[in-house]
Length: 258
Length: 322
Ligand SMILES: Nc1ncnc2c1ncn2[C@@H]1O[C@H](COP(=O)(O)OP(=O)(O)OP(=O)(O)O)[C@@H](O)[C@H]1O
Ligand SMILES: [Mg+2]
Image (cartoon, rainbow over all chains, first blue to last red; front, side, top):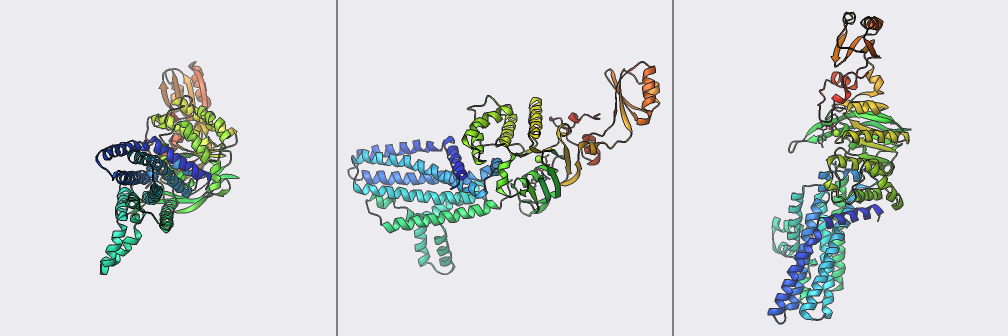
């Protein structure tokens, strides 16, 4: 990786920190500690279930929102404000800029997720008083959540490279919602007929499959996950991210700046 | 070697939201700038100056044509380390301080960490920004941002700098400092290419200028070549409050301001005018060959009215420069 990509990524991270993105951690902490205190008082056996479910779902949702709302502005805002002029007039290739931005946002999300994960394990310790072996699967769930973020970052960047922030947000958010039901969509495609079947099949395979990446409920119920799922999800996320990033680079390479 | 060779760059924008129609911003432009020159790129608003600079920087893509910068193809990323660019109305990451911004830009331009450490305070003081440590750029005034823009353009010690309206937004002192800075760059053997519509700056600084209007190159050359078009006229200035009859008969075009009078007469009547002034015991101040100013050139040749803005676009070139 070229040093320039690293510098751009670091600056993107710094921007997110200075724009107080990490303040979402406060909301997350309040939510999680409130829930932990509440369930530890009222229930007998489901504390762990509630904390893991709620904690991981919140991590995923907070992160997706951050990925979309920062991601859609990463390129278009720099074009709009013309901060790009003095960057691209340096020995920076356009693709390096896009890739640097991507790593900056992904890094922001990983750091954010790490803090939140510490919170989840803390809450877990608070309600269950000790860790058990199946808790290790939480790491896999977190890993999948980060894979999900990578896909969303790349899609937001892709949209950001050709459309306005508002439209990009709409596109990215719709894809997130549809992608979360990708397996249902595949099921529907299997039973539909004619044009609908054709359309649903195409859509089911084009949208990012977030349902397979979501193992929160399995982990909360202490079900083990197969190694091949980890491999399959890793390859899928990498492939999807690289494809979306290539699209973003191809569009941005040809773009006239305002 | 030529620092910049523009080989027929042209740009047509597509404008309109629904039905796109072409808008010609730059006709095919051919222009060569030599190394070590201060070159002025002049033209009224909307002439195509910024468009040319954006094309050269690779920020927009030309409809046709190409260019060479410092002997290489203009799209070659390697030349970017050797050029500096100040955009029009520059804007930067406003969450950074000036030091952080320059540090980041230095990294992108491949300036080593020790070099950055001594170079950043140096360029900041060079552009007159000394007390800005710890202040985010969002709190900078327009003129301060302009100064940061100049600082980032010269930070990595480039061989060639492109300034798009370097004086805009600067106070008189700032303009003077930028002028000195450009002259210093020239002394260091650098090439300066700058766009402006402040004619006095061009007259004071440039080895050569190009004049562009409506996307078309109108003329290129040294200022004297462009402005020495009034043949056989001189301007006579003397102290007094009236025009003696002996001068008046020479059909002089005279203006009285305070206790000085300026008259424009034919060169061959110069002696007669001096005699007339002597007879009246008036003190002669100067006699100089008359040149059209760049301003006159603008107004007459381009048939444009240069908007007189607060930047003193026209007034600074003050009528007849002698
Ligand atoms: N992105 C764009 N889309 C469409 N037309 C444009 C665009 N940018 C510039 N133009 C047009 O190109 C022409 C030249 O503009 P340019 O900005 O190069 O002028 P300029 O010489 O820099 O003027 P000024 O002195 O006002 O800065 C103008 O007519 C302008 O309307
Ligand atoms: Mg301009």
